[in-house]
Image (spheres, rainbow, N blue to C red):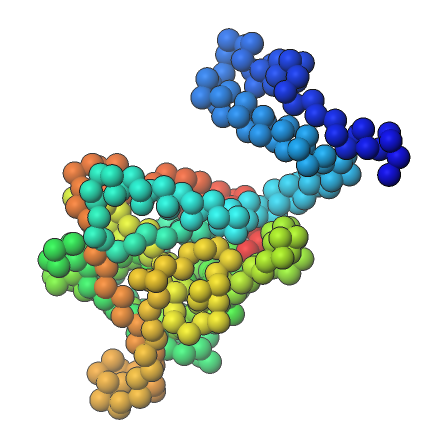
Length: 331
């Protein structure tokens, strides 16, 4: 290494008055318009990134390669896929857990990440619904059931249980045009005893697309992009805190190695194979099936804003509103 190269490696300009003044201008602090909060957040974000460039001596080649990767992530609408992979979704859950603990809203079923694949407007049913359309005959039949209660064990009649999961190939309806509309997506209102039941199929685990921008980022970190077989839930009822969660099926090789960090010990549920002819007949099935039981406990709250899912851009938030950009995501 030459002396000139050595000097370049040790150059630090972040703390100079020129750079600090420049950051204030870039963040809009010298302008009357705009949002003060946006300015503060942008100033902090840019400051951290400028300092990172200084501290790690980021080269122009590295910087522009990163810009290209960010463009690719945006083109494929994969920021929503990379977000859980980098732990942001789980970190937000950790913060919300701490907020709930401070407010003494504890004892309910643990939350975990929503992911980017919820679609509003799924068919509704009372007590029982068949979720799959029968187009995956080789898949194992799943009998999914449970009871919604409050933290004292009292059943919550009429609780709304929204469920969605992928097929046996790891694909979700709406995002997978080969599937029928709302395949394996249902909203079930619990019966008088707070019970819900769904007939569906056992979903498979899946991974981020090979070679996709998210995969490129994860491989740079020496990580995989695999998820275990799982089932998503929104659960809500008046005067109770809305729950966003998902269960992971026990025994999947990635149950405790989920790239999205969604696994929580209390949310790992076995799929018990049932071969008893009487039980098969009771459910009007043609052969053995897997029974998955997931009971749900909701915490009470009088805060109206906590009784509904939080607002965020979704692929389809209402039947009338749809984000085509999110809907085209390659996941």
